[in-house]
Image (cartoon, rainbow, N blue to C red; front, top):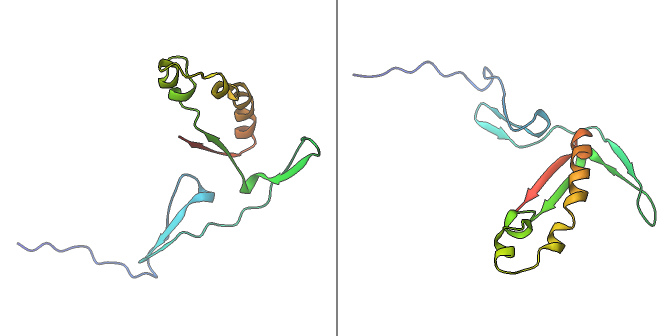
Length: 115
């Protein structure tokens, strides 16, 4: 028995299909081609008080990177604490990160968690 498949559409007939977590960060499949080119975003300048002077950056092209905030390193019952390794220094940024994340996300900022 032979199966017949539906006639395939030409590249010109196929509509682009977008894949990705958000429209601004999607890749496109059109016909036999995959495009990883992202659409340019409008700059979103943000000014932030800092010392010795305030800074301005583009929120549309920035990400908050949080590194190694894992239970093994930071939790009182994590691996480090179980082995007698002090975790006070690892826990020090937790309140600052906890205050910063909601404001950062509300402004539309991207967050990258590295473990």
